[in-house]
Length: 288
Image (cartoon, rainbow, N blue to C red; front, side, top):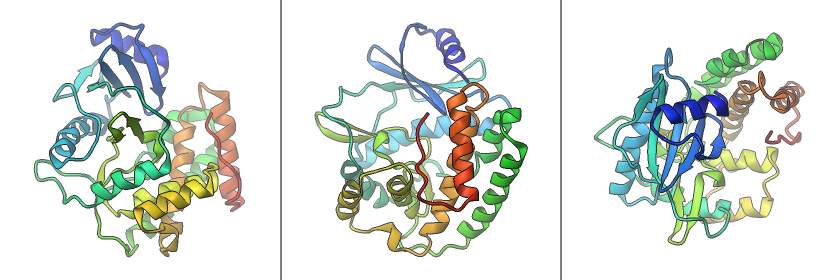
């Protein structure tokens, strides 16, 4: 899905095609007045994408009832527009500053203290579940040998992750715990992007920033501030390398889907795969 297609869906949903594009990744996110509109990828043939949108809206209500600061849905059900799930959200006040890792820690502490919801079921964190779909979307734009390599890694890390013994009690997690998914408004930090919420190892939420420190150039001092605020450093856990490897595999495959239309994405995909093949954990990864 590119921006043009997302705007076509936006128009079909009854909104102006001139809405401001805020982000384009797994979803296209637009701002329109007091609303934020998320246009998902085509769910035709992928019913899990529609189910994910439905669960994200339900999650917003559950978090509100649980007292967790998070984005709130403006409609209780997703719309299905030309095969694409479309969800509406209340627009948050302007940020007072960029979110930092330390802003994430207290939000995760509150989420990690919650029992599982009773009105709906949270899935496992299928971190590797999108690999096949992303590689399929990449098609001939990537080397088939690279695709096969990532499939082999997926299978190996999936088996290893299933055998992990957690340090923390499993339960609800955000699933993509990064500062970019925190909005710091006048009333403090708020969680956004709820679609990866799961019930699984709490360590999933903590490995994300550990990987950011090592691969994406996160300031070690900012990482230390996060671990101090949370109260534990996941790198002390012997299972950290397994979840890190699984996330690196998923991150490579996610980039691949953008390769057909974006030369920078293709170059970054090749860079990431090469660093995995060479077992070089020091190679920096970059946005594209």
